[in-house]
Amino acid sequence: MQPRDPHEPHRTASTLELFFDLVFVVAISVASAQLHHALSAGDFVHGLTSYAMVFFAIWWAWMNFTWFATSFATDDWLYRVLTFVQMAGVLILAAGVPAAFEHGDFTIPVIGYIVMRIAMIAQWLRASRSDEPLRSVTRRYAAGIALVQLLWVGFLFVPAPFQIAAFVLFALLEVAVPVFAERRHQTPWHPHHITERYGLFTLIVLGESLLASANAIVGALEEVESLGPLIAIAVLTLVVTAALWWIYFWPPHHRAITSFGRSLRYGYTHYFVFAAAAAFSAGIEAEIDLLTHHSELSSTAASFTVTVPIAVFLLGVWWIAIRENADRVVNVVVPAGALLVLLDPVLPIPVALTAVILIGIVTVLVIRPPVTRPASELINGA
Image (cartoon, rainbow, N blue to C red; front, side, top):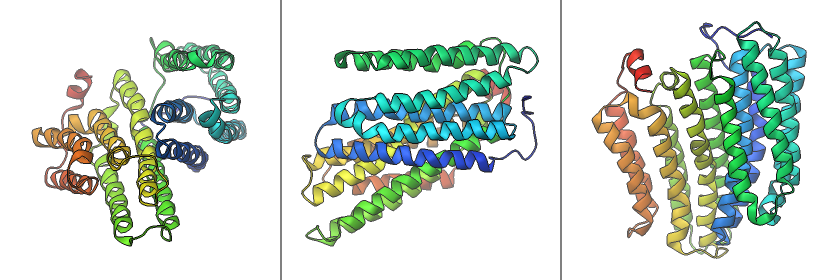
């Protein structure tokens, strides 16, 4: 398992990587559905904390595999089998998401996480047969993952009042593993390949949100008193999803990972980008529950369940990819647009104005293309 050439021409996502991504659709769909139920019941704190915890496991497992694959993907039989084992772990985790939300029982999600992490440790140990200095890096990865995984097993025995504090501590240790492993030497990564992988996963998350929202709208057709508000939500869903796609793919993402520090910022901020994109459908479903009288929320609170994820998505993408590739106008319009979206629920025409704001942002991006800056300037600005 020798490292891949970071300058390999025409490097694209493999069919195995695309197949790997599909199982995450299941986990994200289940997590988003549980968030929707919690929001409609008015259980914001428990719903959001459970969602953040579950989504961390989903995102971190995906990201670990993705960065490993850009460096060491061999596509031999053992690599494929270990990838399938990780996919099985994701499905096990997804099966335990409802119990985690409803009862705070993380037993099945932790078991699924163990399956994924054992396979990941095996991959890093295979890669450790490389020559120095990558041998040291890969062994530190394997040791770091194994140590933190033991802590996650201990998480099952943490009393409920201390679970959130323990989770935050263990999550910080997880995200510290790459910093520990690559502090002296870095594994090679292919900038076009890795950012293509993030882009494809963004498409999957946005597509899942669109599907979940569409299913909720179809299911509400016979329950609403008037089709007008439901049609408005359907139009909003399509416009917002299309605008988020347009905004995400406007900047050249490969220029955002020109150094190790910038790569960490890019990868870690995507937790909020992905989580927000998946939460968008939960907000749309909460709005539909309000229309069908199945919600404990006020109209303002229901609107916030839609606008907060959109604002988080906009600010996340602006911070990691747009900001350094845009002129002053764009760098004012995008964050200002995110803030206006946040204020939308308290205005006389809530939610509908969000679509207008996003169309305005997209219009500005069309008029003002990305600014090309020297690579050295991007590295120095990390």
